[in-house]
Structures are given as structure tokens and as C-alpha cells.
Image (cartoon, rainbow, N blue to C red; front, side, top):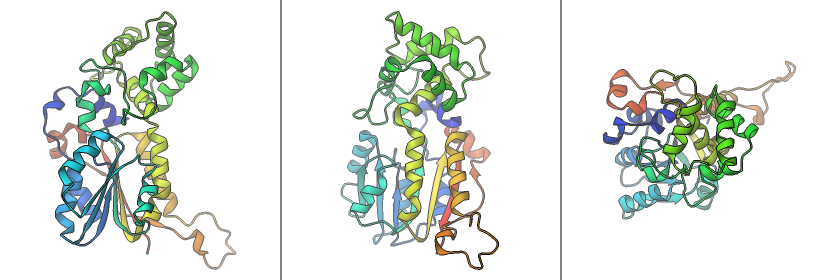
Length: 323
């Protein structure tokens, strides 16, 4: 996962103040208007949400959501007294259910999803996302839901584990790493901490990639599997168009090719007519494009990359629901 795995091994970046990635580009793409209804589906530290609030005025409405209970608590503490803000605790794939309950399907003027791991998640060793400081082998974005990374390793066979490492991180040494983890498990020494897992992976990887710890891809792959990140993206995109009002805009920030490829293909499919026989004189309504891309994929410029290393691999795509 490009930037996402860079973030999982963040070292000196941790001391930096939080900077929302591609903030100006997001605002230019979503075009928040006074009195509009917007949703930040991945609140994180709230940088994007705060900027949206400044632009929608006293008559606007902002829905913020996150699957991480710590992010939800931070959002409620920061915006609990603001009648314009509604805070939701839900996953990306569950968002449409929550917005249905609020009777907001088809009413959003803008919908934003920042698919990266948030700074607090990476920076807290107890969350288990980074091996820079030792912590429990957890990696759950919602620590109260699902199984931890160690529990996944405790039950997964060598072949399936190698597939996870290969498919979710393009790890070339997937079989070697999977074999080492299973052998350690069979010997009663399955790693319990991030540091122990990183050391085990490092011990069996023959060569280092320049500038990258040998365990980086392993941590990325396990995090994606633990949180079903790709399934969450697919579930979110499936309902995103129906949540938008005509002319409403979708903005998605991805941090690696697995994420961005899904977003790119989704926008392409939704903005094309599809295969129809030449004999069809008029394109039927159900085959009409539902989205139109807005510009090309956007990446951070050199100034933002230098100021915020977490923006290095970010890719922003924007699309508008066809009226």
C-alpha cells in the first residue's frame, strides 16, 4: 500500500503536527457551499472536516464518521455542541445504512473518504500498526471488533498466509515469511508484539529494499486483512452514488495501488455507457452514466510532500453525480 505502508513504519514523521492530506485539492474538488450537506466518511483527526465546516456556514450540515472509537470520541468532544454536526460510529461499508436512518440518501452535496491510516493509530504503539515502537500485535482500526493480527496469525495456514502477503502487499518473499511464521507458531513461539514479528520477518528476508524495513509489506498486508480494508472500500463505493444529490461530488484519497485501482475502475464504470448493440437508438435510463470524472487524478506537489511525508503516495480522485 504505498503511503499506507510508509505510514506504518513512520519514524521521524510521528513528531510532526497533523496535516490533512491534499486539503486544498479536496476543497477545490468538493466545492463546499454555504448551506450544503456534506459527509466526511473517515474523520481521523478532523482536519478535512474542520475545513468543510468553515465553508458551509451556519445553515450547512456536516456528517462525520469513523470506525475507530477514539476518533469518534474526539469528534464528539470537538463538535458535540455544534448543531450542524452529526457524528457516526460506523465502517465505510456501513455508512449508507447510517445515512439512510438520517434520511440523507440522495441529499449529500459532497462525500469524502480518506482511505489512509490515521496519525493517532500509527503513533500509538498499543494499537499495533507500527513496529517502530514495540506494542501488542493488534492492528484493528476498531479494537472492539473482529480479530487482532495475532489471532489471524494463530489460525491461518501457510498457504493462505502467503496469499495474504502476496495479494495485499505484493510481498516477493511471501512464502518464505509465511513458512517462518507458521514454524514459529508450531514451536509455541508465535510473535505477540510488533517488534517480535518485525524481527522474525527480518531474520528470513535475504535482501533489503533500499529505504524500506523488510517487515513493511508484511505489516501492510496483515493490517489490510485484519480490517477487511478492500472489502470496506468496495462496500462504500457500491452505495456512494446513491448517497449523492444530483451534482453532488465524491472525493476519495487513496494511498496505494490496491485502493486507487478500485476507485479508478469504479469511476470509469459509472461514467461510461457500457456495451450496447448499435441498433439501440436511445440509451436507456438504466444504462446512462451516473458519474462524470472531475479532472485527472491529483497528487501532492513537492511543497506538500516536503512538509508532510504522509502525502507522498496520496492520490485524490473526484467525480460528480450526473444530474
